[in-house]
Length: 476
Image (cartoon, rainbow, N blue to C red):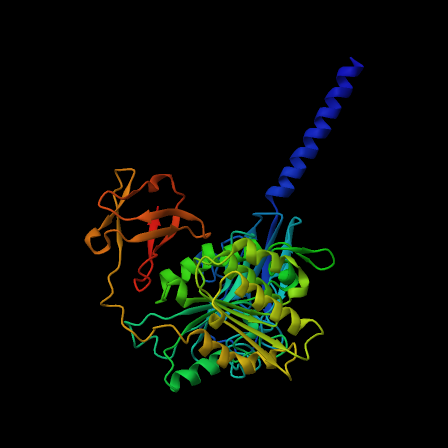
């Protein structure tokens, strides 16, 4: 009887603890109370919260803050995870909160522990602050847009800020498609307010060149990952400094970001019109990315590359070999380091040794060059013009035939429509990772068994007729 009583007491106590823990968990919530905000906040604007709990939607109707009788703002969120990251906006990412200087502020964080009320101070709005990105002291010109503050990177489960430069005539020359450069360290490209140690003035350079007759180009600036920058900008691990996430980062650009940009903007999707560009560690990941994905990139801006980080950068070149032509612009400054010039010249020689045309591998060594943003800013226009020098961007593609695959949803195969134009042409179909899915000559019987392919974007190249633009095949 005593043993039964003891068991019953233990059961009651343990059950009570469980119920208490359940009640605490179920009652966990947080109320964010904005008690201070910039005096210049437009009176008619509404405040929203965006974060990991709503897919970083900056204008979600379910996450609109309520105005209180004292004019403050408030919202209560139930617990959806042990912790959340978030920011406040005025309805979109162009109107996101900033730090005390009006520049980008880190994500806010909250860890749930029962029912909390958190007092919030909004220090600035990026688009309105006199010293912030997008404000009156921003150095970005009108062609620069903030695509999003939090573009999701599925390959690394992170979010990243993306800027874009659109050519001066983008909104008026609606029949034009533009070459595209994907550039690293995006916060340093357009705006001194967001730059770490000065900006490249990419927007000013391109707008000026356009006024001098340049065709124009789109630039997509991907902000670096802060503390994760070195890890993301090298696929190889340096025992002292880290690295190792570079392949995931490049796969993000190739598999996720580029398909999105191509679907939303008037890009010239041809590999010859697609470039990768960066400096320092950004130069290292550029060199890796274009070699790894030659079917995607046809241009590389490699400024002051951190080739010292891993000798594997040289081993990769003969391993990958030359599969398609690429234009490399290699820049080094004599005042950067004792090894910079020699290693950059070694890189050029390695590229030539595997068959890259010596005319397509430019090496520029500047006697006054330093490892600095001012140096890369000064050298950007010449590199840009050199990389695009052979691109027939001013030539209309209207008279050049294009292939069209014809998918039959009820069958296993995909066939080419209007094959007469391409009888006996050699084609290659590449997936988003640069893997060859099909290669061969086209005949009236050519079929692709696409039902076994993963969903995604596939690019078809007419190998023996390079004047024909590559085109995409969507597999659902």
